[in-house]
Amino acid sequence: MKIGITCYPVYGGSGVVATELGKALAVRGHEIHFIAYSLPFRLSNVTGNIFFHEVNISSYPLFEYPPYSLALTSKMVDVAKYEGLDLLHVHYAIPHATSAVLAQQILQQQQLDVPVITTLHGTDITIVGQDPSFRPVVNYSINQSEGVTAVSEYLREETYAHFDVEKDIEVIPNFINTDEFYRSDKDYFRRALCPNGEKVLIHVSNFRPVKRAQDVVRVLHQLRQDDLPVKLLLVGDGPDRMPSEHLARELGVQDDVRFLGKQDPIMEILSVADVFLMPSGSETFGLAGLEAMACEVPVVCSDIGGLPELVQQGESGFLCELGNVEEMTARTRELITDEALHKRMAAAARARAHDFDTTRIVPQYEDYYEAMLSEGVPASG
Ligand code: GMT
Image 1: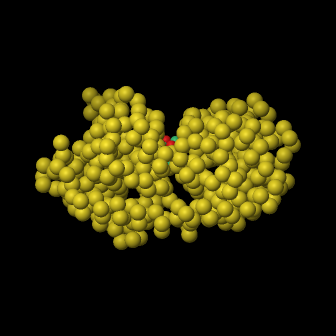
Image 2: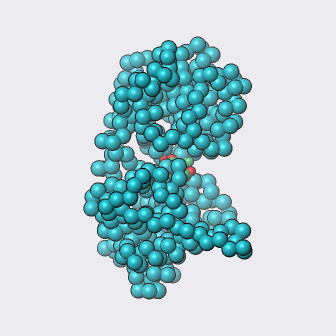
Image 3: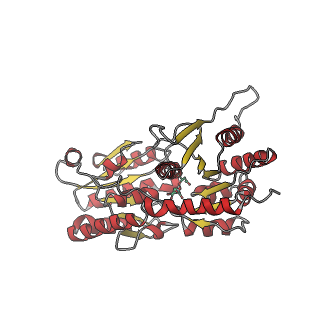
């Protein structure tokens, strides 16, 4: 198949999933055309049957807000027509689904049928998509897509609860290539970070308020109050980074926290960690948690959203009441002080990651594409 994929190419889970999907589909013989405003960050080079089409936006004095969605639509039309795409698969509804639906309608006028599949990822449904300034457009774009997938059961139910969607939403969970993503020996890095053999907690996010990064600093503080030898690595950047830095200083734990900023070699960093902390207020799947689990790092997270579909309570991690720092601290303490428990849960985390291996999940997308193509594109309107 010739598949057009659109995603946010920057730091973020939906872009990672879209990119890894494109790479895995290319390995399976499909021709993949990424359409985005820059090269997706996990797609370092474009080779063989993977192509990249950059969306350029012309500036014009009238455009206080350059219309990216329209430039994207035009690029989709162009690529679909001249590369002969079989379908467009867009990740994150805003504005990708809308651009794709419009592109499809333009192509239909030229007697070209290019079905649109929209994968819903998270805040496109749970937060920003529900804002009155977007909701009618998101609703329309979901309904006009031939196929709609969601990354968890939770997200599927949220979509039905908050939007007027009647069509079936297929749940296809996120995935990871466990052959390429695994814990490796990074002892020199660990010794440099923890010269006295301290345990390592890690948090990876884009530091938006929904990630509750300050709770992670509070967990560290409580553990240090008990004199537990522990360090905290914070990976990523965003609006809550500075408040988290301030909090670390205010609580006097700044020497035990390292803010690493945005990092690409995430597997190497996860390889020195003992516990992954994810106190999020909303999380439809928790891809960062899956990456940690693939590196044998048990997850201590909020018991919300799609996280219970990923983390098995007491086996591969601990699900805690949202915002309950004491509970998260207690669970983390158990993991860093009980070697046998940690060993068992680290192995269970890796085993759980295998359940979401690329080889199990990517064929589900292929089957879904084939079903969409064989059913044909219904006439619009
Ligand atoms: O929806 C977002 O906030 C952004 C999105 C992203 O691009 O990182 O994250 C969501 O999609 C990820 C990939 O499917 C999921 O693993 C994340 O749980 C989800 N984030 C939230 O629901 C907050």
